[in-house]
Amino acid sequence: MNIRNKLIILFVSIVALISIITSLAIYFFASDYRQDEFYRRLENKGRITAKLLIEVDEVSDALLKKIEKDNPINLYNEKMIIYDFNNKVLYSSDEESIIKVDKGILDKARHEGLVRFQQNDYESVGFLYTDKYDRFVVIVAAIDIYGLTALKDLQTIMIVVFVASIIIILISGYLYVGNALKPISKVIREVDDISATSLYRRVDEGNGNDEISRLAHTFNSMLGRLETAFTTQKLFIANASHELRNPLTAILGQIDVCLLSERPPQEYQEVLKSLREDITNLNIVSNRLLLLTQASIEDSEKGFTIQRSDQLLWEAKSELNELHPDYLISIELDSLIDDGSRLNVFADEQLLKSALVNIMDNGCKYSSDHKVNVRLSHGSDNKIILQFKDNGVGISDEDKPHIFEPFYRGKNAKNIKGNGIGLSLVYRIIRSHRGKIEINSSVKSGTNVTVTLPIANHKHPAV
View 1 (cartoon, one colour):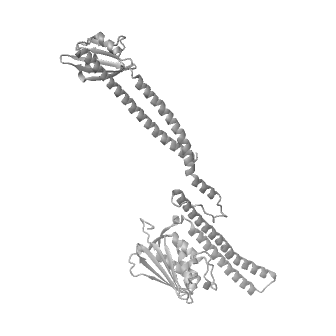
View 2 (cartoon, one colour; view 1 turned 120 degrees about the horizontal axis):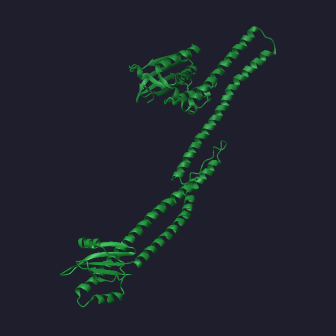
View 3 (cartoon, one colour; view 1 turned 45 degrees about the vertical axis):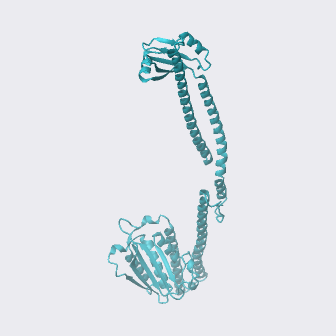
């Protein structure tokens, strides 16, 4: 069942329930009022008749019956019986003995002063009437033909009004809900028209104030992120293909040249060395692409464990010096660090070490002295701060907004060997570790990279 029909059913059900409760309340109070009013009329009529019979000597039993017979204000099928203190009938207009009065009713009327009861269609009232010398019980009964008819007419009117109201509410609800859901239907149609090739399109946000407008705004924001992700993915694939194709093309070219004719062993050795270098670079690119993918996985914390940040620094330095013995890496620990547990970070050992290696490698590679200074210290709010400072070529203001984009390389670094994956990989790894990376640099003045990571403990691995 769609939302429109659900809302209509809910709307009609609520209104119907309210109408039923209101109608029942009106009918109940109208019925109660009719009954009370009729009992008062019976009592008043009984008191007037009893006064005539008991207090006026000239009025006899026969005369009273004649008066009551021709009385225009008599109630429908009115019956009256008057009993003395011995429960003997002094007066009765109930010649057919329709009203059955037992001793219990008479005693109750004497003790309570007033009693009401019903027999078949007759509503009856009994009350105690006293004069100077005696006490009497007056029983008056009649059928409220007019009141019951009016009550039945009220019931019919209420049923007709209820059915008509439900029909009107059903029609108006259908139109109202349809009009209320029209913006949603419009959003659905617009969303259906958006595909992977048209992510540039946006959903109409309407007046910008209601919930549907906020939903459209949220969806447009998601489309913007998707468009950026798709664009980045396309560029990434194109750049990755280019970076992988170049060394493969060079390898194939060198192999084809070698196969054209026989050559001295020295030339084959030179070709093999060149091939080995190309394959090594290709392997580095492939590994970095895999690490970049791993660092982009949302649930990357699943394999995290508690690691010593200083130990990771020394291991990263050792790995880098094995590949580049000429690199000079100086590591300094803040003298205020007196607790080894405050050097712990919650991390993936391979990923975080790879990030540290990349930062150090960039600092040494782009510096003429191949030197980088590393300092480990504590920051505020339980943070570990890693600072990497070099005297390299620096980064221009034009390149700074793009330094974390995959395969992007600064203009002043074109002549230095690299593939542009390093900083984008570092950025994603640090972010996956709930950390922060900042780069302050200017051309020919070196670069200062600051990495901030949360301190981990056994109770709360990543705070």
